[in-house]
Image (cartoon, rainbow, N blue to C red; front, side, top):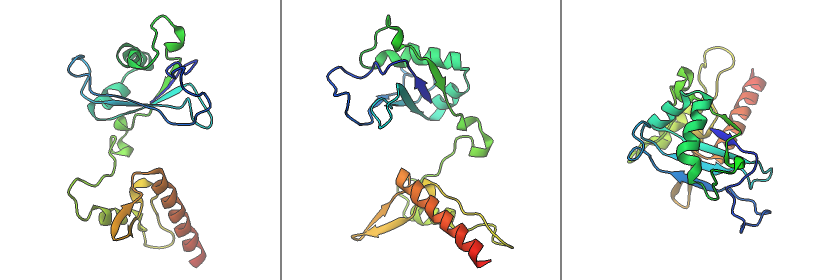
Length: 194
C-alpha cells in the first residue's frame, strides 16, 4: 500500500532535512486490542527522505490482515488506517489536517489468481537444498521448438560460494536486477543461435 499525505509530518524537527535514509515504523498485530481486525502486522516505510522526497508512506502487509485490508474500499481502508495506525506515528496531531491521508493505493496480490493469491517463493527454515531448487526457476522452460521462457526476479537469484560460505542475493533488489540481466542475456543468446 502507499499512503500520500500533503506533508511528511512524521519527520521530527531535530532531523536534518537533507539526510537521505529510509525510515521504518513497525506495527505488531492489533488482534489483542481490535477484535474485528484479523491478525497481522504492518510495516510502514517513509519515502520522505529518499533521493526524490515524497510525503508518502509505503506499507508492507501480509497474512490474513492483507487479505482483509485489500478487500476493502479505499474509503474503508483509509478509515481503518487513520483510526488505528496513523495516530501511532511520531508527531501525530488529530487536529492537524496534514496528518490525514490524501490518497491511498494498494495492490491486491492476495485477490489475484495469477499471483497464486499472494503466494511468493521462499526456502523453508532448515532446508538444505532450497537454493538448489530455486535454480530450476532460472532455467529455460518450453524448450520444444524455437525460443523459450526464462524467469527473472529475486526468487531466481543465484547462490554463490564466497569464502566457503553460501551467499545469495535471493529476496533482494540486487538479486532481481542480476536475474533480469541473466534472463536478458539468455534471450539474446537464444536469438543469436537460432
